[in-house]
Length: 122
Length: 106
Image (tube, rainbow over the protein chains, first blue to last red):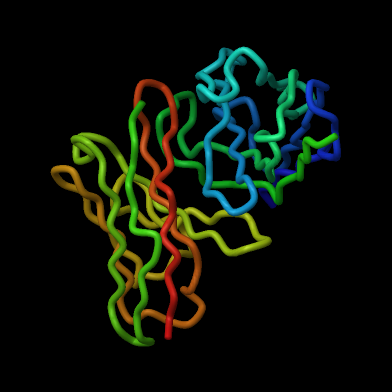
């Protein structure tokens, strides 16, 4: 079964850091680009960052560029999001998502994890 | 930055056809995906590359994209289709989501 499982969310004070993880199973992880997408309370979906199958970054949303870093470990089948300088507006449910096509990007996200909640508050 | 605009809400009677639009500059030149999202659950891809349905998505879901507007159409809408729907496209190596449309089936 194709599955993505996020972890690492929690309550953190403004300015602090948090690292999210996403464990992949059921597919050849290093064939696909992977992404983080978030949903703040009462808001819609927002793409956060993406990484190509080979570890090269696709890009970041303007709202997180310079503070967040996306990475992956293909040998362990894990996707990560290092979040530094967290702000209250980063409070959201964070999902990892897989892209459809092999060895390319710019297409749809066909598999999503269940998400992990990040709350930034003092 | 690129923006996708959706109406905040739409309503439809059971068995009728629901249409949800997504607008963006020259959107017809891009591929559009549509996601169904229920509270407390993960988003589900219902259409990609404008009109293609992933495995397991009912045939009542269809789509089109031309000019500045993409449309998600649900024929014979069922109560289980009540959800938030988001369009998504790519622009300058960034994924962009619309603001979402809450579809009410009543």
